[in-house]
Length: 391
Image (cartoon, rainbow, N blue to C red; front, side):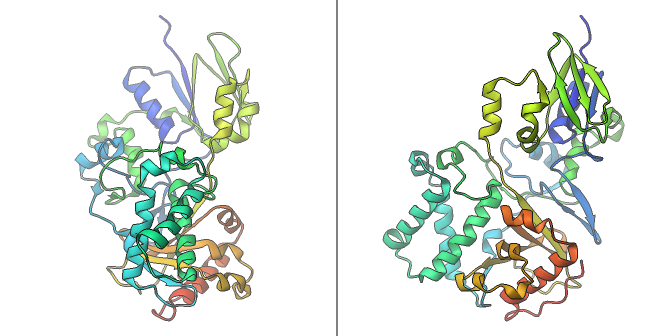
């Protein structure tokens, strides 16, 4: 039997995992074509000041049935102590603070709605429509929470952004309520942290660099960087030809495509010759995703309490209308919170989702720093003395 040859497109976690499995099974004739100049894809741990931060994947979500947890935990790479992000303090855009009793009540209501799977499965509309309907029903009829419309609307606006960051959706009105129930979470702590080195540890684990470096698989030598694929020709029986944008061409008996959904959406119509079957094209077209961005900022010292996981920013409607003092950086109104970063006591991470996050990407680093400084001062300046952002 002829030994198969394999081209893997993409050196993200899926691509290098496929390569590791093939090499472990004795299939050595493997190359990986990677469009960028690095390994990891959405896993991207970078140096920042005196530590490191994860620009992409950050936490290990769950313990039971989670392959990442099962690989890393026996090697003592993880910290699964609870992280109470839901205990973050809530501040309004006028500088006032929402009392902890009310904020605890509201987050419990929101989580109750999200985890009421039976009712969500029966709802035929969007996740946003379902949530807003249940939120108002609970406030008015079940919990009888005495809140002003302004407070409830501000909190609802914040929770929408928070939930969209989890779902990677531009808006929860694009997320199916029933489809949301098809996603299942691994049981256990959903915010397990890496003790050091960030999520890029998973790359070394896939390479089998741990616990014995002499057993490391030769995956790195199989990767060709800056090889953006423009065409996959699978018309010849038994052979697949892959052409890159630099006009280099590679042939193999098999091709494994591990590129992101975004790349497939942009290129699927012209990527494959002959075209993919309609069911696959329809699946690519029908699946959606949004944008989630992180903003890492460093201070000269930690000015917020050690036991405070972060701050939720609740915008009042009036404040949204008068933002001219923010130098027309309209995206800043959609940053929904700043939170502590594990093992980095003087660094905070801001979160922003949807089209405003794409607008933010057009701003310079200095513009982002200045806008974040103004934002923190507006919300927290009455309660804390906030030093200038260093980086």
